[in-house]
Image 1 (cartoon, one colour):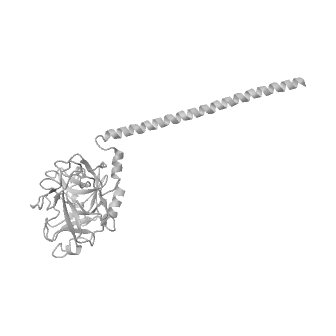
Image 2 (cartoon, one colour):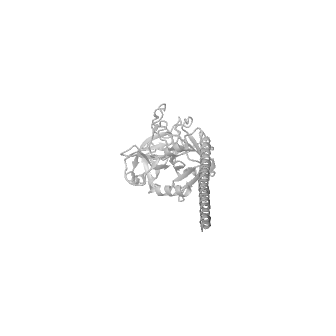
Image 3 (spheres, one colour):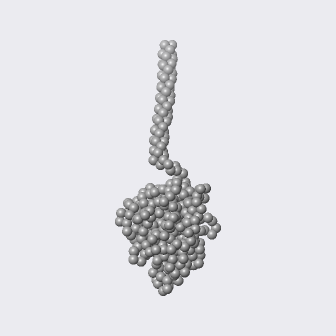
Length: 348
């Protein structure tokens, strides 16, 4: 019996040692697994972080000389239709008074020269085949890579890849430090557009890459409906940007008044040539008007309660320049707001 007891005690001591060894082995394995797990996680995060930093470095190098991409995005996502104060050394606004027209020229009639950075959403649509400075039409920058303009601006251009856009310039011979150039990637013309009567004269042009917004370049603002609806507001004062260049090749601006559409379409005026989705603006006696080279440029009004400027029309057509009872005819942006929104979404 005594031997049995001794044998039992030996077996108990052996089990204790074995249990302790198993416990230590399991604990070591668990600790090792945790160490391996955290080391793996650390190196994975290190690899991901290195990859991200390399990408950011490449992006900074590729945009050298421009604003950083995140600054560009925040600038372009700000309030549209607002103008920033021009640089301190910006020239003052110049007045040219009435400009006499010769047939076939691209000078504007009347108006004042715009100051540098005064209208940061205006663009110059250009083509190398156009004589002189290459300017063909105007347009409005409505997103970082979409320009709103008139459909007839592309009647003579079969190869869109040759069209380019100057953004952030007020004077083409001296574009200034804020100018950017983009090529046309795609043009979307309203499918109901007709050359013979300028019906549905509206188009969108996508740029080959987004612009970098700054005090020289900002986005235009469009209104869908409501208080900025110009229809029926005959006599109201609006601002037309005349992109056809004067003798100093400076962007022009002119105050014009909306003219009742029924009067504008009367027999002594346009005799039914104006469409229901058009706007007429100018003066019955002429004197100030858009002309050749102004096509696609914006007709704008200022918000009554804020500093916003709204693009409400696109320069479409007119009989001659500054003739009595032949005011400028514009495509109403509000009428085509849904078309603009839809086509930008499906083509982006």
